[in-house]
Amino acid sequence: MNVSDLTLLELRQRLTTVGLCFGCGPFRIRLRTPVAPIAELLHDLYAHYPVYSELGIDDYRVKLDWASWSRRWIRPIVRFTADGPAPFTDVPVLRALPTLEWGTNWCIATRAHHFLMLHAAVVERNGCGLILPALPGHGKSTLCAALTHSNWRLFSDEFGLVRPEDAMLIPLPRLISLKNQSIDVIRAFAPSAHLSPSFYGTHKGTVAHVRPPLNSIVRMNEPVKPSLIIFPRWQSGALLNLESIPKDRAFMLLATNAFNYEVLGELAFNAVAKIVQNCDSYSLVYSDLTQAVQAIDELAHNAHD
Image (cartoon, rainbow, N blue to C red):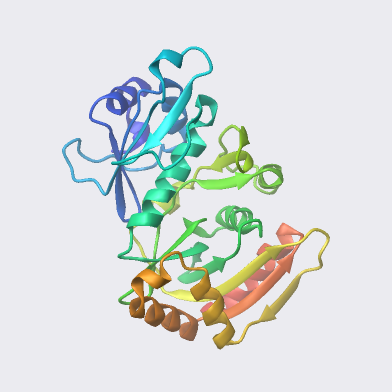
C-alpha cells in the first residue's frame, strides 16, 4: 500500500494517532502531527511512498506539533522534534513542510553512520551511477531535478548514501528541494515536474519541493555501482566548461564533501578510494541547463560503454 491508497481522512487519522510509517530508501520513518494543513501536502507529495504496518519497527520517529496550543488560531507556529529536544527554532505553520523535510534530513545526517554520507546528488541511468558533489549554491539540486526529468533515476539530491563495505550507491529518493530562481528554472525546463507550492520567507529564501517520479520510488531498493563523478557549478553567463580531474584531486574533493568521513575513518577512506578508482571525474561549469544535461548524457554514455 502507498500513501495515495489512503484517503485524506485516513491519512489524517494515522498522522494524529499511531503515526504514518512510510519507507524511503533504506529507512522507515514514522511521522506524527496534529497540524491539519500539512496532511493534504503529504497526501500529494508523498503519494508514491510505501506505507508500512502500524506496529512495525521504525528507523526515525519524528513529530511536527503545535509549539503553542494557545496560538493555533492566531499566528500559529509549529515545532519539529525527533525523539528528543527540538533541533530547530519554531516556525510559522505556513513553513511546516520545509521544516519537516529539513528535520528529517537532520535525522539522517546525524544518525545514519552505517553509511558514508556524501553531500552530493546521485542519479542513475542504464546502470551508470552518477555522483554530483557540490557546495551549497552551486546548483546541485537544480541539476539533479533536471536530470531526474531527463530519464535519469533519482537516488537523492542531498545525500549520496554509500555502503562502506562495497562502495555501492544506495537510493534515498526524498523530495528534491529547490530554492529561489531554481523553482522557475525547473518549471520551465520540465513542465511535467510535480512541484509543491512555494514557501516564502524561510532561512533559505523561497523554497519548493519536487515529487520524485514514480519509477524512482518503485526502484528505491536497487543500488548501483558508481561510474562517474561530476563536480558541478552554475555560473551566470558562463560558457559550458567540462574538465577532467585527476584521481588524487578527485579523492580530496569527494572526501571533503562527506558528512561523516571522520566518524567512519578507515571505512570512509577505503570507500572513497574505491569510488574514485572506478570512476572518471570531471568539473562542470555551466549556465545553460539544457547544455549541461546534454554534456552529462554524453559522458554517461561513454562511461557506460
